[in-house]
Length: 329
Image 1 (cartoon, helix red, strand yellow):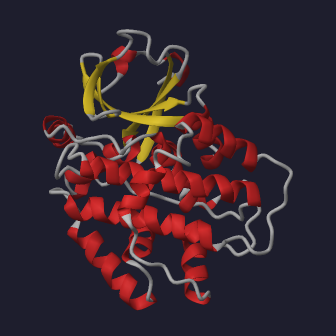
Image 2 (cartoon, rainbow, N blue to C red; image 1 turned 180 degrees about the vertical axis):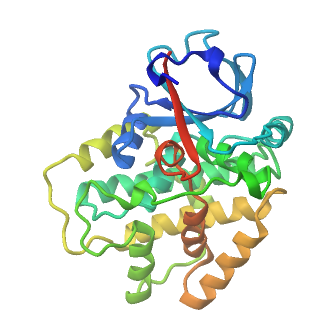
Image 3 (tube, rainbow, N blue to C red; image 1 turned 135 degrees about the vertical axis):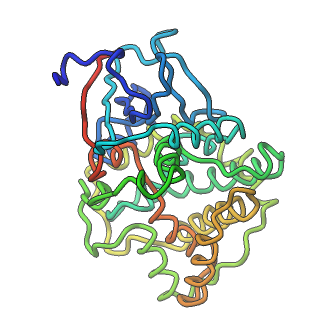
């Protein structure tokens, strides 16, 4: 099969579609941090349609209907399985569609998780932007809960949606993640720990006391210091990451640790309130919190790492997927 001359008519139901990034700064930051060319994932539904997790919720989209993906490359990955019955995967996706499963707040959420699960030593400028990002994400999550948007439904990002549909389809369909791309950092990493591991270690070794978040304060922050847009924060992050400033020996500080803690507590709260929550994940988080003597929010973020999937993972890090074609949209 000629990958360079692949056509939409050659797509098969349940194919995994990975789209190259756009020009917006959030997409650029995601690509830079994951060392990837893709930022969005979807499933092929048949008859020229895809089913995807995008703002504000899971929806069906007709390829080439309005030029939305014009100029972008679409990489097609397929389960490497001789007998592949696509119904279980599409049925799982349709369930999320019918339940109006919401998108996970914004692409800033995906960016925030990538930062947490990457092994790197941030410079001072990067830390300052990360603090803003996690404060903004915590505020968005609490606002989402307080306004009863999609009550009882757990939001997902696009790549997690695709991965979860294959998980829900049954054991024979589970995607086998290999060596995660986030472990291979473009940045200098002095201690070989992910950012969330560095923060947990900092909290354990320091005298920092992290109290339960005051969500009223978080609500106030979104109207004050968090007035920057997602694109502005992504632009500031890119500039900080690409600056010539060298990371200091003391990478983590109290303010960053507290900001990540608040984000973790908000994410933990959203998971615990969702009807489709993952009890095993919550149970593991509580157990880890007791063992390490840290907050449930921080332990939740650590446990969540095992469930986190990026578009790059779906493109290059699944051992039982094979790339069958590329389409220039």
